Length: 636
Image 1: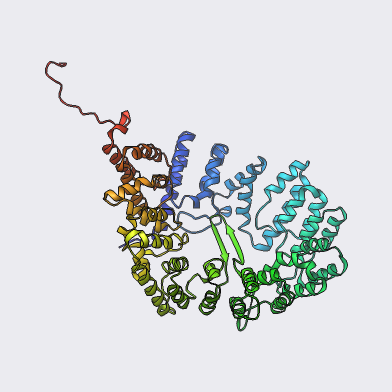
Image 2: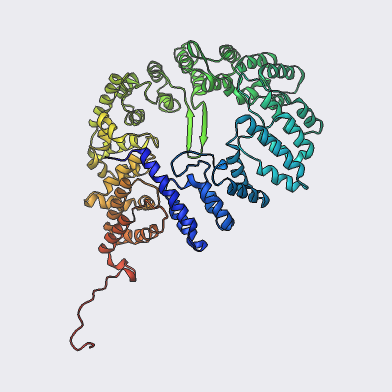
């Protein structure tokens, strides 16, 4: 019977506890100890025993073992029984306190900050915040120089810490210059409807000494909606210069979301007209849809602001407001209204539609980017295509991306009737990555059948089908396919592109290169599989794409995909000695990669295949030596 996750966890932590105690009690050199611990660090339970090995390594040699301690440091702590614990109250509490004390005395900012955060995590929230604030002031008071105060503040720079005004006033009085960035970093957060004291005393002190940045930051973080609205309207009445007014409004714009922002924007626009447009364009994200008892609705004041922008022909405000702040239904209705507007000149309608196209917002993180795009309904997309087909092929293409909400069957049929290759390839790229949902299965079956029939009917001669299919696959976004096997089972168009067209792709080298350059890894894997086939054509095309294939040696790939890439590389090397001469050094270099999951045995097999085919590329150490019995008369 398979071991349950709970039993496996308990077994692993018990084994790790015993192994660590054994290693730490053994008489050995620092190098041997570090090697033993680095080997144990490969196991998942190692980090959970920071409370055990951390103080021991610190006592042994805090400088030598510091990189290991920082890289494997974890506040999550378990005992040998698999129970979570607060180690600052456990068997190693005194050793942990010594570790914390020594890190503080040595001004090891990073280590002290982690240890203090770990220790304070065991306190209740009110006591935790009170201790942290008191300790910040105490340390700054004791520091004799500004450099020392900077160091102490850096030690106390814990992410969750939030100041109150008395603490901030005390820090500001002790050293305003050193405390300023710390105060800005640890200002309290306020929810949309949460009231927060305004910190007027510190703000007035900052204004008195000319620290406008601190005063503005305090205001923006702590201000509530009534105060903000009152102050913004007062600025609109008193500041005459448009540039100065926009700067003042930006300096007073709150960081917390304000449900009534749209209503204030209407009042500002009515009071000052175009003078406030630069400010509005930079802060329309503050007008966000709201939830009510009947579901999600446009923000309060949104219809009035939209009507004002439309009435005054502020196309920039009108378009940005719809892109960033409108409900999808409101956006769709506005596009449809423009498309059906026969009274306006087509050029003006087209210009206003262009104001609505594009992403309404972006969220970017390391390795991840998200864009908010307003979707059109099938009826609106079809009407827009009938009047302005070039807009659907271009700026509005992202607004007709099919998904779980819509399959766009009418738009697909119109594009098929017009034989619009560009739009069809884009629609096919979105359809080929979609698993039909239960609620829209019939629509999706209709769309997939129609697109699959269209691509199946394309001429195979001259590479027509291969180029069109490669165009569609090349438009697949990265990370858009999560369940490849299920997709092949349920999506007829995906089966046609990925499984049923190998010979047609190979007959068109440009299509294969497009597949190799696609952002979607499954499309690249298709190209690897094609170039790894046992055929003269595959070897020829693989050699033509040597520049792209050799990069796969250093890329992170799943094992199955890497093996397919290795087959393609072997084919490229088998085509000619010049290709092999380029690849062999790259393969040798790949052996130095530190990735423990890299299939070095398969890499060795790849190198062996290349050297067996081209023996002139072997190094001296790679030339086989055959030993036999000595000839008669040789030796004894």
